[in-house]
Length: 528
Image (cartoon, rainbow, N blue to C red):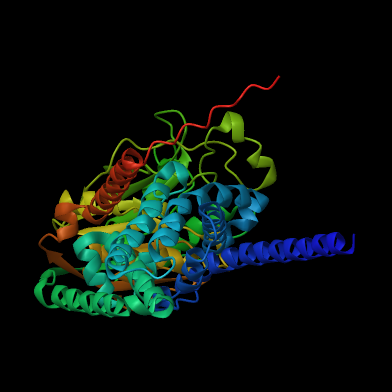
């Protein structure tokens, strides 16, 4: 009796210990998944990205079962989404949690790869495979969630390297995707060096090879060839409050633009939603804009956020206005912000409008990208706000001949968060990827301009500043490998993962086929 009770007591103690361990591991997975957010602006600890995944990967490689690894991968992915998008909480409130839980599922395959390839004491061959397949698995999660229906490519790990010249050079070869692969590969090498002594040589060789490759790209890849310059004025009116904020904003932008007289800009750019009425229905506003264009001697690129008079629905549109009025060049925003500008499956998720600040009415989508021509022959490719997160959009515009990419944005809803700095940093990557300068003009900051290699031009306009600034924007000619070949790192990653799955599947079939047949059970003797 005593022995039986002692056994039960020991079993209960072990069960309690296992339960506590599971909860500590789960909490650790959430915290470890959130850690990489510090590499992004505003903290901008870019160097942290190269080791930020190590705690999470060390946890996953010691998961006792595949189910546990999947669970901790899911929790870590959800933690990453919440941390990188935490500034959405005032708008989405608790709705951010189910969104993070949904997107966190995308890290389950990566977590299983980490456990399988980095667990135990990997031999050199398995370690080498891990350095290829673990980054590919991470990139797969980025590729899937970059689909607009799942929120779009915000918080890609490679985007944390927006101010690192070597990383920007790599982005010109394979986009932000290649930078993400490099960052995850370095994390993987650190895990091998720390937790698998037998694979340290492979890890060191991988890091050295990556450094040599980056150096070769730096030396071999030609820089964008200079092709003149463009004087661009950015008008940032600053925060406006009250029922008549649209009128106040227009008046402030009008005053700031008029102050540019004598500065000889070639183009004046206003931010997103800088005009709150359809110009066709408000000839008075068109006339005032035309007068401004004549006064400063340059066309104005404004952004109209209004219900159109010539077709149903509300559009966000980049409109070029010259001294004679609107020139006819118009771009309607194509990729809208989920919940911010439309509610996906509104019939099912429409209740989100009562929980947060979701769009009460869906905005309409544009039909396609547009290239606009300035009087001096320079061609510009407009993007509106969220669209700067999509590498394929800027790549298409550069491929179609845009000499300057112009992004009109507004993050005023998230004014005192990390969002403005994160958004502005994306322009550096789009510039490096395309070899074209990017002008990022906002209503309330951060406004910034980046040259063809992703380098910052002049000073950024901070949040809350109400001012106009003129930038000497260097133009460039030539085509980057990323514009020419597109997202080849993504295609290569998918191919590597597919090959790995095929090899594993074939091996499993071969093992099952060679297994001995189970022996027949002994005959039972009937008893009378």
